[in-house]
Amino acid sequence: MAGALVVVVGLAFAAKWWLRRTGLAARVQGGTFEVIARQPVGRGQHVLVARFGPRLLCVQQTRDGLRTLSELTDPAEVAAALAQARGDAPAAGSERTVDLRRKDAAS
Image (tube, rainbow, N blue to C red; front, side, top):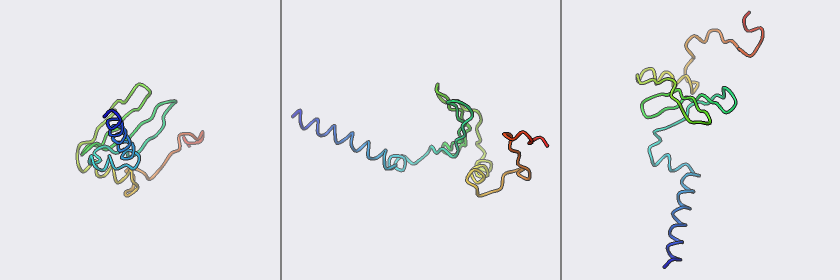
């Protein structure tokens, strides 16, 4: 009886691992959380743009955890931001892009 229990528990863990590895778990859950963009800002720190249901969140990720920086809830703003992030729409005010890493960016 103990052997059968070990086999059943092993199969449950194997199924959980397989669902996570193939991504089926997110599709089954509805995929309510999606990371749209991730940008490193320092050692061990990232800024994430994530869709959480109908909301769009800007989140700081550090070694200590996550902190919400801002949130969009207006459906029109969320749709525009998602289109911009995915490259479907031009960025607002994108007539001039400045690379802040270059020394001559101020000119």
